[in-house]
Amino acid sequence: MNWFNRQDVTLNAALAMLVIILFGLSLMVGPANLSLDRVIDGLFRGEGISGIIVRDIRLPRTILALLIGATFGLSGAALQGLLRNPLAEPALFGAPQAAAAAAALVIAFGLAGATSYAVPLAGIAGAMLAIGALLAIAGRRASLTVTMLAGLALASFAGAAVALILNLAPNPYVAMEVAFWLLGSLQDRSSDHLLIAFPFLLSSWVILGRSAGAFRALTLGEDAAASLGVNIDRTRRAVVLGVAFGVGAAVAICGSIGFVGLVAPHLVRRLVGYDPARLMLPAALTGAALLLVADIAVRLLPGVVEIKLGVVTALIGVPFFVAMIFSERRMLEGSPS
Figure 1: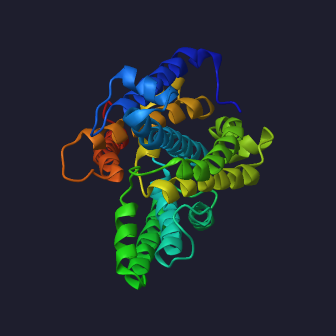
Figure 2: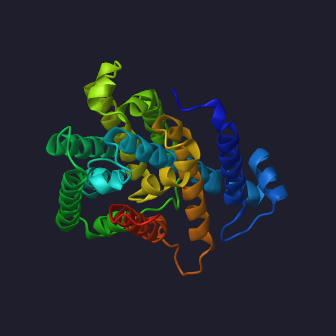
Figure 3: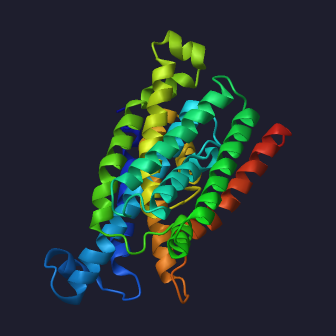
């Protein structure tokens, strides 16, 4: 899959260890804090209150945070590699918004239950349509400005579609539930949600991982990549399909969670020598760590109700995005970075 390079053993091992530590911490913290001994006892014996809290409530939620965070990090790295654009991220190009609109349509109008496979399938179709439309509108050699404008238009259209769906929903209580779901959360997610999402997330990883080598060739330009044997159209279709599978399933399960796909690759890009192929695995691990941290934070922050996960990721991601804009501006102005 070209995710792995021997020079990155230390980096990938350190990130994997961080994810493992955060995974264990996620099982320990919450409204009822548990010691490590009680977590281990509840995890393997599954008896009493500890077993219910760890195995039935926290374990599915923690696994979903890990898998979805990794998917967003990997999807961001893949889009950045395909478009050769460090600002590329699923949320900037309308994929999560379109996935949310399609999933909201299915839920709000009672076309399928929340735990039905129809919901992630609808989310995948929406994400695929958005990214496919972006590539068609912007064209093969689009500039950063054109790509961003096309993405903004698609995201705005998908947002308007969500608002229209909520207004036309026959049941106002269902519409309210969908509105809160769109803010992003892993609260009350169960093993059923995990079983629904996992096949699509795994498919996304495989598809995007197989394209990693093409991203390295694309750094030389599309003509040079084609001369090296890279099938540009097939790579583009594979990335659209892989991102759609991952983002569509993730949004259908946990709602809209932004900026993880943007932040994760940038945190580790310099550590892999700006190589888009070597970036894939570290970006996935970093994305998993970021979403685990955010999910732990929403359980620790005081409040009558749990703060939505999408709110926390936005609070982290927006300042980071603004800092990136200032950095790009300094580079354009010729100032030292």
